[in-house]
Length: 283
Image (cartoon, rainbow, N blue to C red):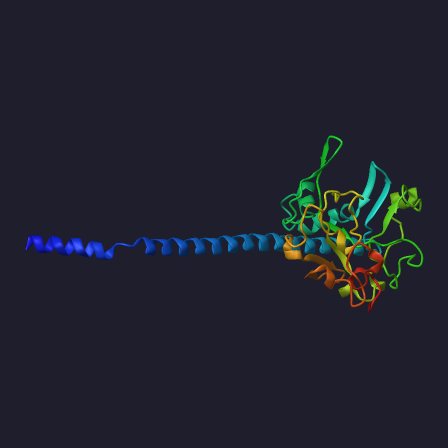
């Protein structure tokens, strides 16, 4: 009886064992599942970063709208440069309003300048900070579409075939003044005059090392071919798409060639851009 029992145990164990082939199949299946899970995890992380970028733009819009309401319906300009030591950019103008919008608890102090600065950087933007001289400068991701500030698109009007971003500079055009710098009385777009706000880009992404917080450098993104640093393949950053904050406050996630209109062109020439890149309605 005991011998027969041991025999059954022996043959049962043999029948239950995995063959080499079966083990290889199990290992292969586990490896495939692991690969799929890794891809899913990476996509989830990318989606989270991308969502953070969209949320940042929404907060920037809220602050910009508050700035406009407090400044005679004027939209923020892209930048104003008196000299290297005296520069004001669009984020300089809206940061105070962003801080006010984020202060939801009256018993706590408002967010710090560092906290606000982080909202100007998309989580998907991982370029290192820029160093000028011996000082590291925090970067931002977002820029305004440019205005040429030249005839026939001057002064700013709803029929201009350029973007919203006005760049005032003593160094470039000589059209600035001390009064304008100190009193913020520079000409600007009046938000109520723009006829098609849902189709006008206010801010979009410019992931470049020279896009520096509170600085005129990088304050405008001049054409669709200028969204990304040369070291970043366009197909790897957000799968080739960019976030665009429109003047009416909604955000679109588009391929650049979807932004230039039916007759416009993408590339390195802003003069060939139409569609969402200009304030002119119907183009």
